[in-house]
Length: 114
Length: 113
Image (cartoon, rainbow over all chains, first blue to last red; front, top):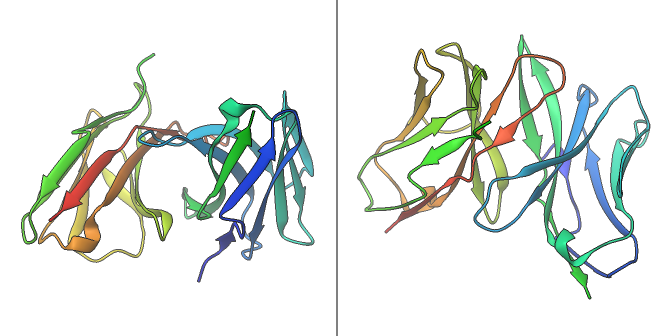
């Protein structure tokens, strides 16, 4: 059962426009969410995170919104740049007895066209 | 400071063989997690080690095992390789704390033929 879902495998936007990447989750025990960006042949790079006690977190061009009642979060990139083209993974943290693990979605491939 | 180092970067093995992958975490990080990335399944959690103890384990068969040494370096072993084990294996290290500061290595690309 997939607990973190990214229903759009790909997204294409024009340079300068807004990119909106979506993520849904099913486990109400998740207490922290992260977005990672991944280029081919490289490991994921942390982008931005949000605690479950907040509904918004902003860092430069990146903003993450969390809607707990809908179990939905989204990543907004404004303005989008060609260098943002990558696969974006949504991840949720599930605390387990003093440890925690990341549960990832399957990723959304973002292409920003010049 | 140096990042997470995974070796080797690429590996080709034959079905039935075994393989050992290595991960050196960021200095001072005591937690090391392993993930498998495949095109169809995304990133899936394998296991996490902290202070030489396995704290958490994902839903993978017993052919997948790991260990952590006193210097926090970790190894992952896969025995009796199957074609389906072909994947990118990623290691992440983190410090203790609430910021969930996971840093990933570049991964080891394993191809089983």
